[in-house]
Image 1 (tube, rainbow, N blue to C red):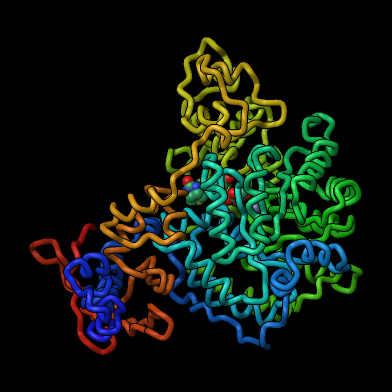
Image 2: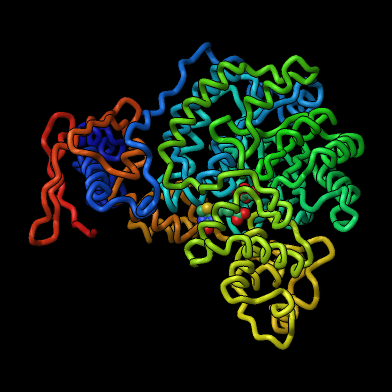
Length: 632
Ligand code: BTN
Ligand code: 3PY
Ligand code: ZN
């Protein structure tokens, strides 16, 4: 293959074959490229088999008899869906069509918020891509499939050793008739602090190009001023801009007057005027109660006039009732997770919402048989991720005290565990509520939720009360994220941050109250690409890689370093990825479309006197031995 590629290469054909050619096209001179990739994957399997995966060490294991997830059969060719409408008529036509529907439209969140909220965002692409064709063929009436953004971007590179862009590309291709949807943290993009405007714009351009159709854009302090750059960029890409309100407090509670009905209606109008095609209502903690939903949805419908897309979490156990109340009040679309990935800190149960609305005016039109088949697949997938289950056993009305987002809950619990505070979880919950009040009662959603969480953990760990933290005479070393937020780097909450705490945290330094992006100089994209390529020894940095690096420079470089050693491990079955193989076990790994490796693990040797273990494989019938250090 190498020789043929070389002979056909245009530079070779034009007789410019010099040593320079070797330097500028190293990929062609990688003689054993294919074999190398197989060797890399075998090295990964051998290492995990011998040493285990650090992320699953000491955690519950999937049951030995857990069945392999098997995607459902395709019932038909994919019928035209919302994506066809978007491609043919544009985003405004999608919004108009939405408003005309009698039925409640449904977004499936399983591939994004579902696993972010239940499994610490650890679901791997292969488990999504295998079922995506069944969504396209069997559920073409879905409004959209939320499958990208939020924490999934960072976790893909950081923990799953895979490229988030490739996930998006593959899902896009497998669901040509359905709109894909992402969660975008406005100026924070998919990160934890504001980026320069041109970085935000470039990220959105690339996300639209690689395959996002609906952008749910929110700001973690509900500051519309700080959402405009992102919203404008989505609109410029001719994609659906879902300008989003984050819901906190309780509009029916006179003691939470800061976030009353008027506040939300006003914000809805600002988002409409900023160009949103759809109004998102994001109840990230699941605080909107049924009676309040009736009032809020009705008012937003009447006074804003945009179609409304409602998102909530079932942490309290009452989200299903809120969805039905929202449906009564005229909501246009709602989010739900496939049954096996629903409930608790995730979205309410998709199949049950479909059943509850059947034979009513607002019947969703989705096929419950198709939903059950897809959910059965997800049930088998979830079993593979036992290591990442939170162990939350029951609904928790405590959410109305702490107001933690569903996507943060399990993560903060894990952080508490790592600090030895797991037994004191209810104190963490109380401290979270206290920290929120101390910051002036703010919206808590990534990244502001992380700031409140960091503060709460510190208060419990150090035994500090709110009074002590606020007392100018008590010395407190605040977490970096708190300093960053009070400096104004996440933007401004309604009414600003309380003066006292700002003064104490910043020790008199003056905070910025402008939009942070106004002061962040633009990044020179081509210069960054050039330097990155140099750092990666001539690796050709494409636009997706560049955007990954701009979001998370260190995470991206670490990912690239591991990619060099282990190759395309995203193609491994999930069980193999986290637990390696057993002697006698055989797997098929499709490393490229139509290029499959048949891998059999024959035996594992004892550890030799150098501390190494030999792992004996058969690769496509040929014996291969890989030696790895035993680090256990
Ligand atoms: C939130 O803070 O509101 C959402 C939390 C999402 C956390 C994900 S989980 C793994 C990754 N690592 C982090 O530190 N955060 C993200
Ligand atoms: C995220 O930004 O990741 C969220 O899920 C916020 O709810
Ligand atoms: Zn959510």
